[in-house]
Image 1 (cartoon, rainbow, N blue to C red):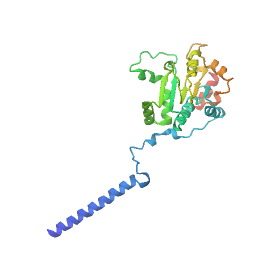
Image 2: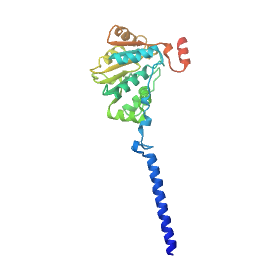
Image 3: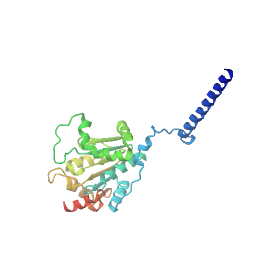
Image 4: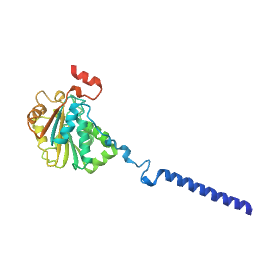
Length: 255
């Protein structure tokens, strides 16, 4: 019994020692000295797609990126699919990450595209979500869902309809006014005069796809008038700048 008990005790010690070595080896593989904070389920950096470098796909996109870095107010006018909104949001995220601004403010008119959605259930956020979805999509692509949710919660990113912009002064912010072709002249004038100190504003829109009645969109007139100012960059994109499916550009030529 003594010998058997001794062998069992030795075997237990051996198993315990090998188990400790195995556990130590496993922990060493996961938590190496060079990166002891890493965890396979806790690394949110894998969801940060905003770190991807953006580059222009054409001459006019290059002009737009340069204008946003040089002017406090930029108007990007052109057809659908030319990257106006995406580039503006990407520059806004870049400015926030670099500490150039303290917040991002995104706004667009809550105008339905030729049909009525009727009564929408939920609170204000739920009612406006369908209209602001394109902005959420662009932000999610640049930041990732987790960081976007956190930024919306702490106020560093704000998404609001045009109707809630009157009376505000937007200092230290990067402002993007999307779908500006659905704003009247008076609305655009109100939005443009929200620009405060240390801020950049980018207005994007396609005059050919307005959902307002003929002659009500203020974007073409505003763009023509501001084009004469040295501190305002007006970049006009064309069908050749479409970066969606090639068929989109071809359709725009005949529609």
